[in-house]
Amino acid sequence: MTNLNASHAHRHSFILTGIPGMPDKNPWLAFPLGFLYTLTLLGNGTILAVIKVEPSLHEPMYYFLSILALSDISLSLSTLPSMLSIFWFNVPEIVFDSCVTQMFFIHVFGIVESGVLVSMAFDRIVAIRNPLHYVSILTHGVIGKIGIAIFTRAVCVVFPVPFLIKRLPFCHSNILSHSYCLHQDMMQLACASTRINSLYGLIIVIFTLGLDALLILMSYVFILKTVLGIASSGERLKTLSTCLSHMSAVLLFYVPFIGASMIHRFGKHLPPVVHMLMANIYLLLPPVLNPIVYSVKTKQIRRRIIQVFQRRKNRA
Image (cartoon, rainbow, N blue to C red; front, side, top):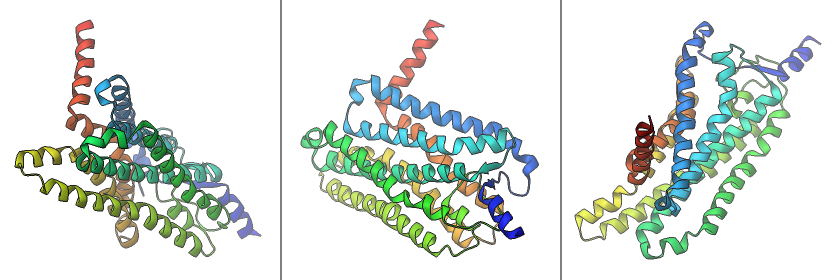
């Protein structure tokens, strides 16, 4: 009877972890995290606003960048409630249904971001291999359909996950190892076989993030093959420079993901704080740095942002 009550109680709530082993130090991260979230929202919001008002940016490449900025904002907002709860209000408890909902959106927007990076790689292929037909191939309708397909794919593959979690009984510890809810973290607390959950999670990773990484790699093989066929070395460098922002975004997404996955699987002996840092870097770093990278590397965006600040300075 006691075990049944424990299962029932733990099923209704989880305890999120801030700084492992040092809950009294959680307020120390309140302002740094607040600054990162503010930077994320301002940076990506600025990218969206600049692309909307700058006619020279009404091109396929920047429409895909808008989708990337929206996915970054959505991913950040998915983790924001639990982060605020832990580090600002010192309330680590989250009810089961809220945890499942947060888990769903984190995984959906993570897969959306990966899909957007693939579409941006396709954009670069078309721009470099077929520059004369670039706009006629990637029309507004095509870009809209690609965006819908990216989001639909993410929702469809993640849709079964909440039901796979809800079927599990929870009668052990209800303390999660992160500041937000993830599928692999939640299923470790179950007191029944999680083989189906593990297998489905592995299938998702292989056929979404793994396949996307392979497609991006193949895209750059085609791009390099085309670039090497250009006679002028100056033109080769100029063409490759148009891919630098995208390559940076790919590295910002996949390097932390691979690092967090490797530590989760092979770093059981590492201190819990290392797991916490890598998981937070994976979710917080790309949304913060993507708008900075594109602002620095894209002359039109950089120029428009400078113009806005100059106007405000002149008015003052």
